[in-house]
Length: 379
Image (cartoon, rainbow, N blue to C red):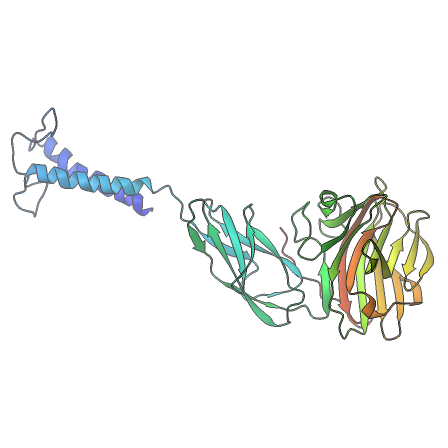
């Protein structure tokens, strides 16, 4: 029971013993006007038992003071204590990839700040309170401490217990299935804008279309401006690399799709090498190494396609699979040093929309190893 409720109960009990019982028994009488002192019975032995002969006025003053104190305390009983706790991830677990850190906070919390290794990484003023954390680039088997600080509108703060997790990504350089983000938000934990296309409001995490799970990454371009988003990779000492992704082009608002390694030709022009191109003009899939190569495969609208590209940097060769069928063999590839930004894009001159999902980039060939899928906490 709330301490303040106990206080008001005690105050009522004091009043009952000090005034009601003696009054009923005729031991005290009250005046009709202030200060309501008793004109008879100048002492109150029964109601102040154990104290001795105490003037009734003193008894009343003590009772009044107690009543006021406990009443003021009782008025605070409805104020909820400010509390916060980390609910995702769990303490002592191994995490990987891009995941959501989530906090439970009391109703009077106005904002929650998230800290990793005592460094502020995000402040969230919207429920549910969360932060999307990208663990790629962190050393494997490293332990990281996570805690949260809640703040109410009066500036009061409450700290959560610390949650410790170990990071392990293995041979995965980057992966994103877009499930950790809030719908219609930009997946900033893993991606950054290269070319704006139709603008940020039309490039976001889509909640209604997905290859797996419930969300994907929707890119929208215009006829005059492609939409391109990328992620930086550390390719130092990488000799063989494989990436996988899923592509869907909607019939309602189609655009060609291009994915691979972005190379900036000049401040206004860029291109993609060592990638895949779903060309809108003829609905044919092309591979893009150091030159373009038509695979002869025709793609269809409103259909998800799984693409896998394997790059052999020492041999400068690339192979391509579409839905687990190899469609390109030993296409000449560009050197690793040309580009370390992996990009998703719409095709120039087509406008429209492309959906991407389940992107994974890992060291090694697909036949030699398989990527460790990131553990992602759903929103």
